[in-house]
Amino acid sequence: METTSMNLKVTPRRVDEETQALDLEGEVDVYTAPLLRQEIMDQVDAGVKHLLVNLNQVEYLDSTGLGILIGGVKRLKEQNGSLKLVGPSARITRIFEITGLNKIFDVYTSEADAVAAAKA
Image (cartoon, rainbow, N blue to C red; front, side):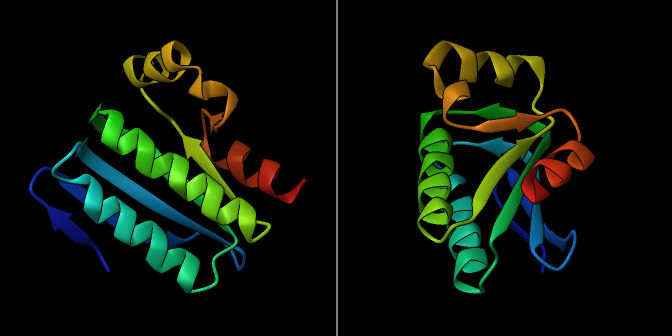
């Protein structure tokens, strides 16, 4: 079920039997991050092991959003799962590089690459 909050739209969709994707569109900031946090928690609670967060349509990501994604990585790793990021723009990729978070997140240019890595 698609959920929208201010400037963020989150659309969950099933990729395969073990993998769920969250397609994000808009801005992930202090106002919209709680929506993303809740969606990640709902997926984990539903037993999803591998979560792909599609950033293709994300225009802005602040430190609150980064914190939510870090929390998601930790939560899924505790359950022997994974959270992978797909298709961030050059500007958002730069944020991961500057903060050193590119060492924490698995970032892929395409969903197919992320799914293949999740199976490996």
